[in-house]
Length: 130
Image (cartoon, rainbow, N blue to C red; front, side, top):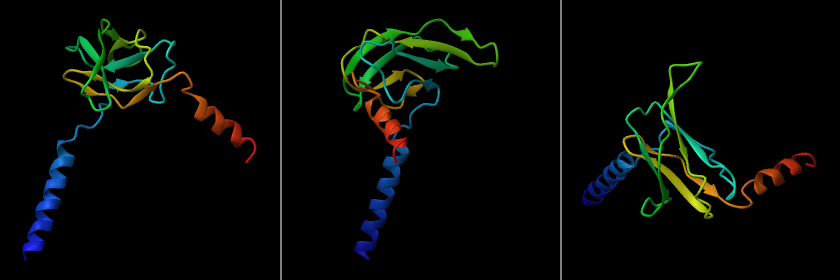
């Protein structure tokens, strides 16, 4: 009986941890494959009228590598969406990051690397031969 009780406690603890984990926000659109270090790096924040700041954090969300201000809202001509732009072009350090906007959340992880598209290019060339 004790083993069964321990099992259920572990299952409930695991479920609680999953519910507490924060899913990436769909309001943050960026190139999830990544960016070249010397290239322009921008993300679009959708329907976030109150947001004014953004942060580029390490994957573990403990270190801040860049902070900046979001551009003014722009209304889309083809929808009711209001968008803001996060420009982090000045961040050139290679690594894996997430973008954080207070009250919106975190982006999906992305990379900055000098050979960011190499795996995609290699796979595309292989597709012609196999």
